[in-house]
Length: 95
Image (cartoon, rainbow, N blue to C red; front, side, top):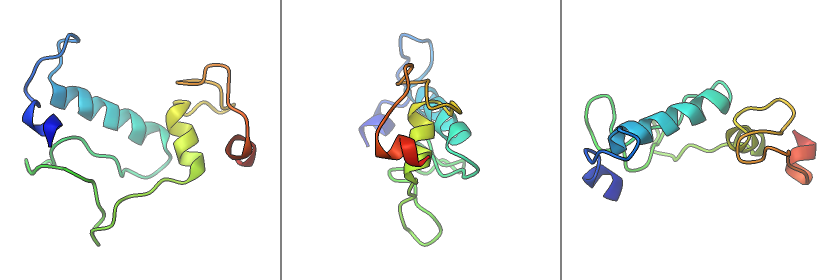
């Protein structure tokens, strides 16, 4: 709700908070596979998007592989994004 309340505030990046959140959402959608589950602050109809849910009202989920793709920005070798040197462990090995 706080992000919605400050959605028109212009950030130091010369984007509004709403635009910045929408850009982050678009990035996550572009790297987490074929789903388009992520959402910004508002729906296309202007409604507040507090929690993105599916048509049954259930919160979207991501598989461990999708989460890994988000944090590595979709790097095929698992090295990128927040983990430029790669990741290790169970989820990295299983993907």
